[in-house]
Length: 308
Image 1 (tube, rainbow, N blue to C red):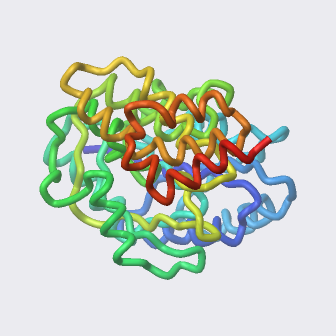
Image 2: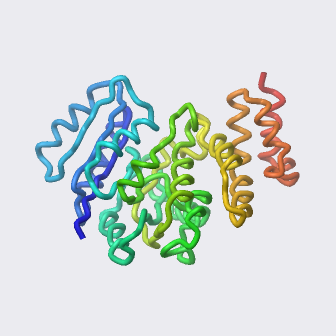
C-alpha cells in the first residue's frame, strides 16, 4: 500500500524540547515522508534552527512561522491542512516518538485496511526525560490502554469519551483529521484535544489500539495538560462531555468520566473566579459526598469560599 506519513509538530518558544521531538522523528525505523512544523514562537530562534537543519536531513521539513501567532487550536489545524501525507501523526513539541512508532502504527493498516486511526501506549517522562514506569502504567490503565482493550475497538464513541484516543502520537487518516479539525479556542478553550477525540469517535469507526509503547508523554515542568492550573482543559472537557449527544449505551461511561474530571474542573473554575460554574459542579451528581468530605473536596470548598 502506498502510505505517506506526515508528522505534524506544533511548537511555541520551546526549541530545547522541539530539537528532541524532531530527533525522535528522524531516528524512526520507518522514516516519515515529511515533518510539518507550525511555529508560534515570539523569536527567530526556532526558524533559524529549522532552516539550518532542513538541508542536512533526508526527510523534508515543511516549516511555517505564524505571524501573528495562531494559538494551539488553529496551529494544529494549520499543520493538518499543510500536510501532504495520506496519514498524519500529531506530535506536541514536548513529547517524543519511540524508534519503531511509525512502523508499529502503520502496520495496523496491513491488518485492517479501512482503519481511521491507530495508537499505542505512552511512557510518562519527567521534564528532564526520566521515565516513570509506575506513572506510565497508571496513565495507560486510566485511559483504557491495556492488553484487554487491544485491537479494533467495538464502540468507536468510547475511544474519545474515555480518552483512549491519546492527546497526540496517534496515526490517523489525513482526510478524517482535516475534516474533523480542532474547534476554535473561543469554543472549547484548552479542551481542544478532548473535543477532537470525542467528535472523531462519534463521526467515524474503525479505531485500533495496539498494545505496544509508541511514545513518551512529558510532564513539562512537572505538570500535564490535564492537571495544570495554567489552563482550563478539565473544565472545558467537563462542559463538552456534559452537553455531548451520546448513544444511551454510553451514559455509564459518561458518568464515570465526568466523576474523574469534576475535581479538576471545580479547581479550574474557582481559579478563574467562575464561582457559579464551580458550585454547580460541586453539588452535582458527578461529585458525590465521599469526594466532598475528602481532603481534596475540603480544599475545593475552601477555594470557593476564600477566593474573592
